[in-house]
Length: 97
Length: 97
Image (cartoon, rainbow over all chains, first blue to last red):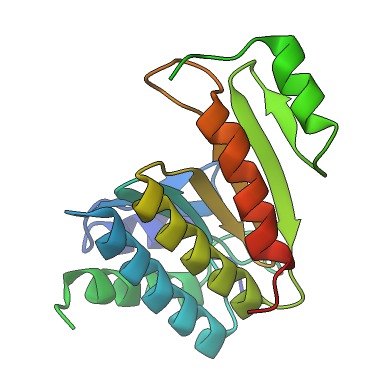
């Protein structure tokens, strides 16, 4: 999968919330939870999805704030897969399941 | 609980493996796992312990490497509680349960 150009990424980011680009190759978002264990539950859902897709974001847990940081190292940048996954992460965050 | 001095912390660190001090107030260790899901399982155990102790380390998951970073913000440094918890983290890592 090929690395996308800046314009394509920016266009996509206008349709999602809270995602930013870091160092031109990482998609980053901070998710906030009402409790620590809500955050941990989200991390487990992200982990399950990541295994299924074989694409693992960097995850940081700072009490009730979970940061996800995603890139495609083989492409040395952001790909269609990354843009697809950030939408799925958001869905997991907003779903009540 | 009071912040410990450098000598007390160093003495303790000689009895554990892989823990270092960062910026004079963080205890840091990187744990490596044989698979991503083994790492995630460890994170869940750490989360459970953290809730029980009401003391939550910063956790970073970078594929099969999990980094824990611990401090006592109220004391603005490392306390007895932190030194007790790093031993418990190690026990969770080395236990097969």
